[in-house]
Image (cartoon, rainbow, N blue to C red; front, side):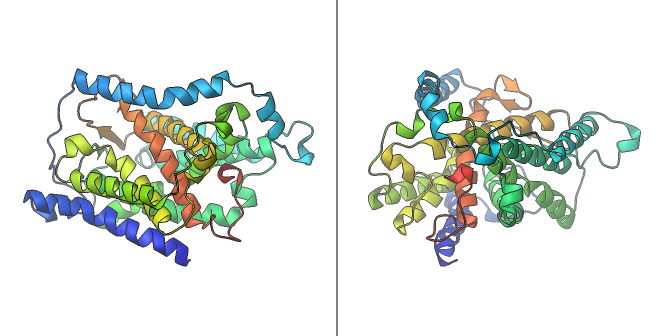
Length: 378
């Protein structure tokens, strides 16, 4: 518990305080960013720019291309040998019945979300949570079919802890979004503060369980991370100086959200991850990046893919739903897939890593004798 407090308390304090300090430095009223529910529009977004679009695209391609090339060019025979399926799964494990229930449930709510049947009018604003509960059920069934285990059944105490942790986790991103206003919600009508809190907290609680379950499935496929267990090593990844570097970069970026939101909005997604990692390194703890010291990138790559896959489903189900969100992304808002501009999906990569880092932290998986690591965390 003490180890978690050492990381969570300073991380939350900095996430809350730094953007407000940036606003204060600009001379703008801080109270504008503390409205609840948020109502005031405070950001004028920069228009689309081909220069900005190409710059971001080059950085993104240059970052992920080596990983994609490595996984596609690696012979997966050795990876399949190293992937040990339980003895009980010598034959093919059947997809469990409750997974089929999850598929049917998800299909039903997908229909309700994208149609406007009069008989479903009372629930059409509330389809997000049922859809994602179905998704969580399906990915856990998929993991069970592949490995004989899933977090929902075999780490059920951890599984249920993820829901309240997820709600608080995503509220932090909602707070950071106040300073950049990259997304706004529509279709839910005027809500009181209590209504807004309840109707937002419940769906927010599904984020971490969805990403954790997706990562667990992905890890059961050796091809998804082939060759990344012996990739480029970064021996200094846990060095204190690097921890202070991450802390400095994240602090400047988060402070700048309140000053230059059009330029530093990526720190909505990078800032929390850098903060968590920096505080863990400075306090002498292992991080989600620690395996990079030996060239093992799987624990970073698989969560990133899990975040992207969940992001595609978030955007898909948001697309025609009655209550939905809309985007305004500076410089790169072009070529939308559903509501999200193409390059906006890049944010889901660090977001997925942040989700697993927070899950590890909340469940205290890195402490000696701590909770057993699930497949996604090993």
